[in-house]
Length: 92
Length: 237
Image 1 (cartoon, chains in turn green, orange):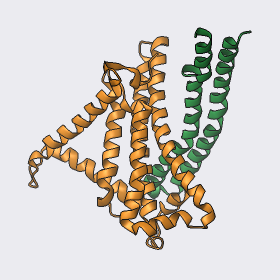
Image 2 (cartoon, each protein chain N blue to C red):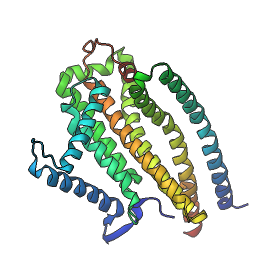
Image 3 (cartoon, rainbow over the protein chains, first blue to last red):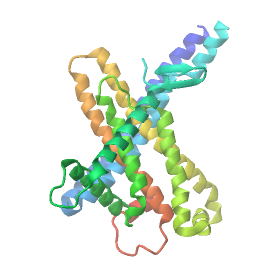
Image 4 (cartoon, rainbow over the protein chains, first blue to last red):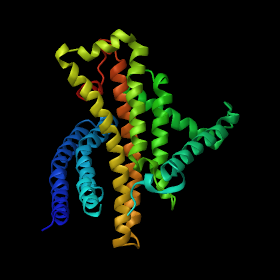
C-alpha cells in the first residue's frame, strides 16, 4: 500500500474516532449539568433566570471541548497537512 | 464543498483580495451603523415614542440589565464594548438566513479578531480601574509560582473564545450544506432554525464570557461583600 492510501485511511478512521470519543465526555457532562439545573430550578423557581443564564454559559463552555474535537476531525478530513505534503511530494 | 468564507473571492488584485468575510462583515457594520443613526436621529422623550426608538431602548436596557446582573457592577462602563460585541456577533450569525450570504463568523479570522479585542480589553479595563500595579499584582496573586499558569490561562481562554464561536457557526453551516445534498426538500430548514438559536446563544455566551473576564480583572477584592449569586460562578472560571 502506498503512502497516499495509508494517510487517507488513517485520517478517515482517526477522525471518526475523534468525533466519537470526543463527543462522549461533553455529552455526559452536559447531561449532568442539565439534570442539576433542572432540580435546582424545581427547588427554587424564583432563581430560574440566574440558573438558566449560568446553565447556558456553562453548557457552552462544556461543549467547546466537543467543538475542538469537531474542528480537529474537519481538519483531518478537509485540510489534512500530511495529505497535502505527500501529494506535493508525488506531484513535484 | 466550500465552508470557509475566506475562500470565496469576489475580486482580487495581486495579493489584495475581497472575500465573502470582508463583504458581509462590512454589510453587518453598515447595517448596524446606518440603522442606529437613522433611529437616533430624532429621539423624543414625550409620550409619542416611535416604534424603532422603543425597539432600540428595550435592546439597550436588556443589555444593561444583563451586564448589571452578571458583573455586579454599574453597566455604563461596559455597555459600549459588550453591547457592540453582542450585536455584531448576533447579526453576523443570523445573516445566513438571507439566501446567498455567508456568516462572517464562520471564518476563523473574524472570530480570532473578536477574541483579540477581548484579549486587549481585559488589561485596558483592568489598568484603568485598578492601576498598573494593582492589575499586574493579580498575576502573582496566590503565589508567584502561579505566574506562568495565569499567563497560559489568559492565552488559552482567548483561543477558546475564538474557536468556540467559529466551530459552532461553521458546523451549523456545514450541517446545512451536507443535508442539502442528502434531503434537499424540507429538512435543512429545521437545521437552519436550530442554527438561528445556536447563533443567538453563542453570541450571548461570547458577550457574557468577555464581560466575566473583564469584570474579574477590574474587581477589587473585598468590594462585593453582598451575597451575589454569580460571584462563585465568576471565581470558578
